[in-house]
Length: 184
Image 1 (cartoon, rainbow, N blue to C red):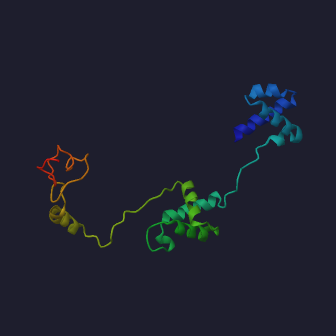
Image 2: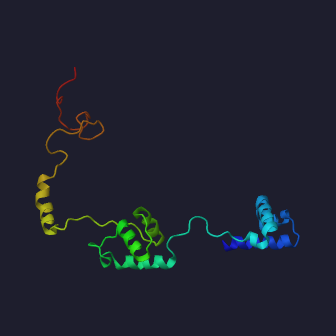
């Protein structure tokens, strides 16, 4: 933004020396309309008329210092702030922000703040607390082969012509109700 403002100030210097809009346009590499707007703003308000207007849009509700305090709190973890598990959720983050700064955010908007702090979505692996790894390994090695279905095991194959085990596909060895009979 400072570079754009410097160009406008250079235009003001040229206008003050009596340089025309077309010459300013060529010297600064701007469009005719831009040079025209700058000229009229300079005539109305002088160099101050060409100053940057500042930030567009709504000002943030949290300043940098407050955001730093929020990030420090997040790095400490949820348990440190009275939550039962080590999992940050958007409502929990919103609660911590309100406690630390007095500013209330909707949980759905908290995500924008977290992205601004370079935080990303992390989903924990869902595993039962009662999970018994040894029992799972035993089941997979002993029981799973007995219950696992195989393509040619029991029963007819697919009815699709494109599948290899299809009854409709003459090149497959699948037995079907018409096997060995001639069509009439």
